[in-house]
Length: 135
Image (cartoon, rainbow, N blue to C red; front, top):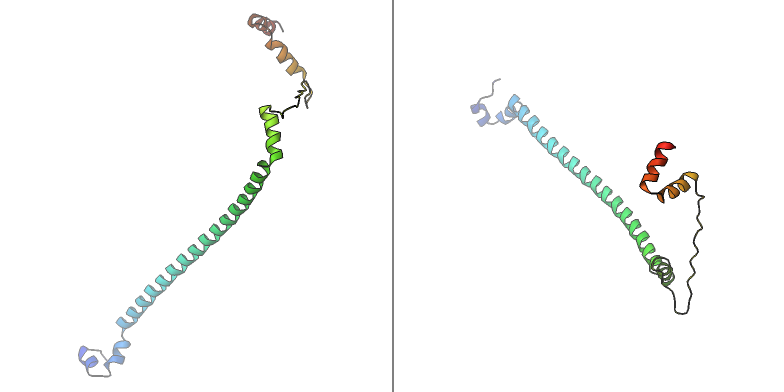
């Protein structure tokens, strides 16, 4: 049975119209558009959730770093630390104190190369050249 505009208009043709190939293609296209839109929304929501997770981790790391910096700031601003730094770096002393500086102590022994470099630093330039060519 062929579907014609006249058969659609006379009732009973609506069922025939739904059974046509055009209607099937139209439904398939509509379904494809809906699925495409849903897939895009799902992907966008997933990307937003990933970004939220990344930002939460970054916020936690910054919070830990902030707490460590706060602890360091409290430690360095204490009176004992300020006094120690003033004594070591600025050479300050309290009234009535005498400062004693001990020199000549080193944590590492001096090597022969370092002694020779110190000795050669005291030589004049011609003496250095003489030593360089005749050694």
